[in-house]
Amino acid sequence: MTPTPRSAPTGATTTAITHIGSLVTNDPSLGQGPLGLIQDAAVVIEGDRVVWVGTSSRAPATDSHVDAEGRAVIPGFVDSHSHLVFAGDRTAEFNARMEGRAYSAGGIRTTVAATREASDAELDGNVARYVAEALRQGTTTIETKSGYGLTTDDEERALRIAARHTEEVTFLGAHIVAPEYADDPAKYVELVTGPMLDACAPHARWVDVFCERGAFDGDQARAILTAGARRGLTPRVHANQLGTGPGVQLAVELQAASADHCTHLTDADVDALAASGGRTVATLLPGAEFSTRATWPDARRLLDAGVVVALSTDCNPGSSFTSSMPFCVALAVRDMGMTPNEALWAATAGGARALRRSDVGGIAVGMRADLVLLDAPSHVHLAYRPGVPLVRAVWRKGARAL
Ligand code: NIG
Ligand code: FE
Picture 1 (cartoon, rainbow, N blue to C red):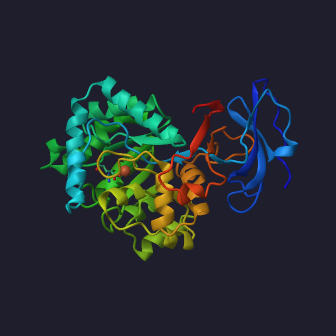
Picture 2 (picture 1 turned 60 degrees about the horizontal axis):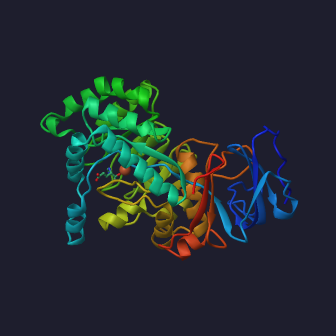
Picture 3 (picture 1 turned 180 degrees about the horizontal axis):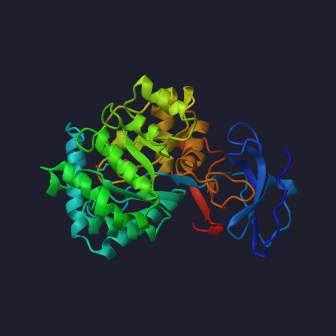
């Protein structure tokens, strides 16, 4: 394969990572297959960008140099779905589920109560802790949501805190109907689409709704997502997690960036996602099925239909208290019909597609230098050696972060 040309020098420090046994670029023009795999590869970083990718023996001279000694390098994981602004945990609820109780969205209220009680400093510290935890497992881009405040002030506060830690911030005032409005859900939808949206829109990029029985129906979800879109927020939808319903088709109709969960799908849902031509990504969240002992989403069915699939953690205290993308990759391969190559793509390039980002999720000239060095000869080990901490080093925006 031909090494990519070096981009114009910026004068920033250059670092080469050489003798990479197996490099995942996610650029088919750079190497083998959809992952654009290159054996015995090198990558050169300048400032926060990748400036050269090719075979190790042809790597240009640089200011500093790291020898990968045959280990694999992959793009940093892009976790396009998490809920990190919360306080407390739900250990008791998890225990009850493992004794046979079913998951219910009602548990969200427990976290809402704890989150409202928490100070800004406590919430900020929690987000920092989970973002750092994710980084140690190779996540270099993470989306996160509000949704445990459910008052205008508490939702706005959650988004302000989230925005200190990531640029991918989602307004989820419509997580459940706030307890104060239990008898008048229509009034809560008015609040979410009115004053709450006014306060929250400036702090977010995305708007999300939990469209599910027990949360918001199709009409309510449509009203909230279109109101968000009018305020410049792009929709994404919690859809078809607990049963079939209108979420997925609404997401496609409103050109949402992603329909998330996609656990219970009709053929018409799969067709709609496929017909979107990748505009609406199906984001699968196997941590949720693991932690709620639910049926696995059928990734194979989606991939065979031509749907673009992303994998994310859904990290939250109720349904999926994991920040580990390697864990989600292993579950997707073992239980959702994905090959190791498909799962790696979905956890990196797929997440980037779900966030409509072209600067992350791959390793190519001009992209952000977000790289993970694995203690393994190839990315396949992420599924082959589940539960083993294989992340040896991380570069984020060109800087060594681990
Ligand atoms: O994506 N499904 C809705 N929201 C979260 C769960 C939130 C919770 O249980 O606290 C999810 O699984
Ligand atoms: Fe979620």
